Image (cartoon, rainbow, N blue to C red; front, side):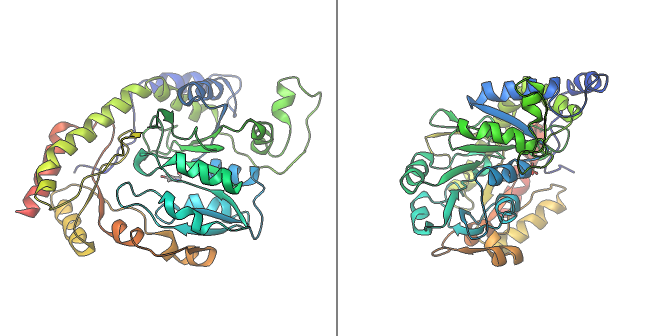
Length: 376
Ligand SMILES: *Cc1c(COP(=O)(O)O)cnc(C)c1O
């Protein structure tokens, strides 16, 4: 069986995790947490990176930081993971879903303004597959209407838009270190990137259960107490140590993924030329990170057949998001603005091929051979 995903693992994680176990402090914001944050800050050129237990938690923190409350509206694509929406719905927001572009599967920047109202508080672009959204246009709209931009960059670690790291362009950005992503902190994890400095102080408070404990540890205040809303948004040192090993070798993992991505792209070009399927499109402004290799087939029915065929050949390929606006909770907490020209249609045609750190060329050849056989 060729699995769809294997959690990234280098072999260097063991040493750091064992070291972490033997530290006197193994709760959040210890040695490995701080070192990992420094690497992320350096990598992305963001003002502040804070590790979190998940990208979901980083998104929740961003919603608290923006003071989202009942009646506020937040704009995002419907083709995304539930957490993008849930984090804001938890604070009482209503979600306005905007259609995607068929080329990148990202929010269509030209439709965002139609969804803006007096109640809009934020735009949440999602960089699908680590391919950047059209951020210049999105920032321009946000500035004009005075709304915040939170980049859901769960899939975007090490990817860039016009030379800038994804996650470092809006007011805040979020990363995921879940086992299905390019880097993992032992299965679950995430980070909040803060690019707008005025959010930094309060972010540390929210992350420390609403206390000013971080300032206390830095000697900035002489006692710590409850000062604001908050929760427990810190990963343990064991998770941070696992991540630290992978961040030290971030380039190696990125290059391996890109090389697997490019190999699929090369092997499948013929089928695209014959117009049997479509391959991913990368805009020239974007440097992606090989997070997903997706193909699009003619329609939903054919997709079902191809997935069945691959399964019989012991290859685990998978579809992706059921658009949120057609889900039970999505209907309750949000609404689609304008026409759904591409969200449903394009998501129904999409298949993600096995892609992970350590994927072998022979395995990729087997996947492509199975797809070619299906079309013969
Ligand atoms: C994976 C993912 C998330 C959630 O990440 P977790 O770390 O599992 O909470 C959120 N948004 C997008 C777009 C994702 O791909």
